[in-house]
Image 1 (cartoon, rainbow, N blue to C red):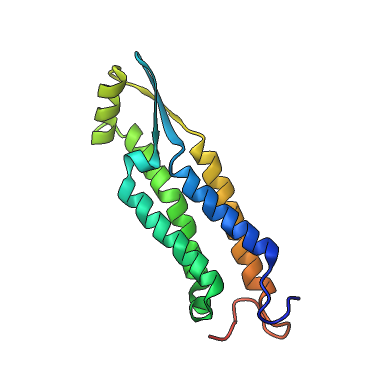
Image 2 (image 1 turned 90 degrees about the vertical axis):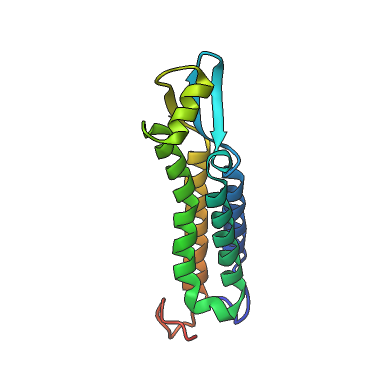
Length: 158
């Protein structure tokens, strides 16, 4: 059990590592398209820059919720939104690259020189899974180890 006011160092390390990986993943290849002129690689930032910015805001709120007692009662909902926002831009990028009637697919066909380009998932998807697991475990540790012994998890006073 942690002393009052003491932060769990492992939870903080995992939280910052997970957030860092999630930010890094926005700039790593999320889709790869093979074409006549080679391989076209696109990141989530290239495909959905505004979605990526919203993800950065959600991750910033998550870090703030880990430190600010005023946000303690909102920590779990913020964590859920942040983890969903970690995946949402990447999934949206990948699906929009596969969706035949979308503008992203048409741009990929034009850029690759292929009428029906083959779209592969990029390394960012694996990094995002690792980031989400780190952030989720960090929030779990903060919530469970930060509770007083006589208080069940999830029942923290505001």
